[in-house]
Length: 339
Ligand code: SAM
Ligand code: SF4
Image (cartoon, rainbow, N blue to C red; front, side):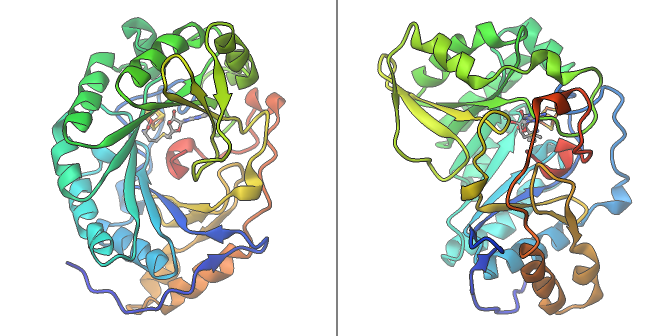
């Protein structure tokens, strides 16, 4: 158990008056998949020497929590490939125990969930998001360039058996998985899971041209509405997705539309890369170094001051455009900021 230095909670607000109470931490930029929309086949990962230790990640998260962050999401790359990720989660769960944190969640490709689901539940994790773009084994392998969909499904079942609430996230791709979304929805809703659909974003270099498979979610909705009764749910559920309920299944489908409809006015989050860079917006190359102030002192004062000052630089929003899918203007990789 690590020692905290007893800073009082003041709450974090950015320059536009938005309350920032949600932190996403990329545990590693490494991954056991190579999803076509996320990274190149021969991607070069960061040298291990540049990555924060788990103790440093714990310290940074603890400073954010003392500043008022109430929700923590661990992501990556693939968070579960980071050695002793479970140890970090176990240590961070002390903030759940003392009531300073509402939840620790995970976004994962699901492959290692079968192995870790019970331990995650024992660490106080109650919800995981699993990325799954199709149930079709061949399409799944083509998208991930190496994955076996059966291992992800086994991971989902293990998570559910461990009592975790699971949400499925799917990146929608024209001509790739657009015909598989209904099956994915029935799979999710049949198990009491929400399905969130995400538009392809132009973040980081990949092989090929992402614009080929960009599909606005308005088209997906129109297609679903030919077979199902879709009822808009009034409010966002603490995130960028707009949800609707499908009358026939009783389940919810979320739509994350960074390309076709902005949602930045309600942004409540910042992201931390595995190298200790604070990403103020997923849609911009705007990073503030927290590693240097963290390492400059045993006291948390310098890094705390750096965070409070950085928040004032958080931009109003991103300005993705569909033509950027051909040549992304946001050059940082999705695996750095964790989606
Ligand atoms: N490896 C984990 C996973 O896949 O869930 C966590 C990291 S991944 C970067 C987080 C999310 O970002 C995933 O749901 C993934 O599908 C999504 N993602 C990656 N690249 C994307 C892109 N270019 N556009 C939209 N979503 C993307
Ligand atoms: Fe890995 Fe997630 Fe990126 Fe796929 S989306 S390559 S699983 S980090």
